[in-house]
Length: 176
Image (cartoon, rainbow, N blue to C red; front, side, top):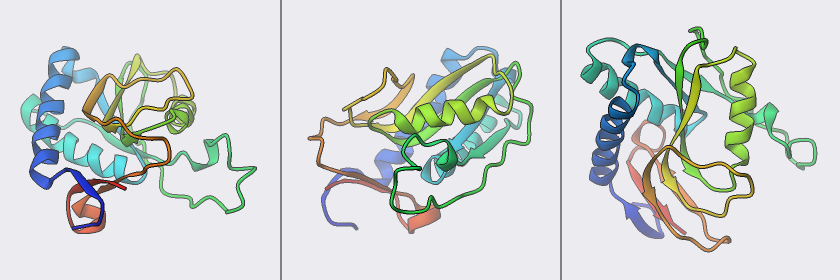
């Protein structure tokens, strides 16, 4: 357990991902066009989980990739720290795909703007839909999620931390 107010437990996260997988299959009837791309780091972990769920339900393996957006950020040249570069792995053609872009928390929208720019370097998908585990509001850009696990109203100076067992040893979402 991490300090702060728990807003999602491991069971909540599991139920949420199951529901989101069902929503994707309902809203994207051309299942063969679905490809998942998770934003490094926890978005990639969530994408891998959703890929397993969706592949099981669709009866076929769906493509899943990982995207590092650090060099696409609009603030990296003014940041005092050097960006920590993670892996980008999109080893499938994005053309004619419905890309489900996955991140853990949607806040200002700037990470998603960077991710959209990065995806376009791989080609032109049929469309891109955004899935987030938590939407906390406070957008600075006109970006919204197509699939949302949980919406949480927060003050701007608060923080939402997502912990996932692949990276942190447990599943939990905490408001600090």
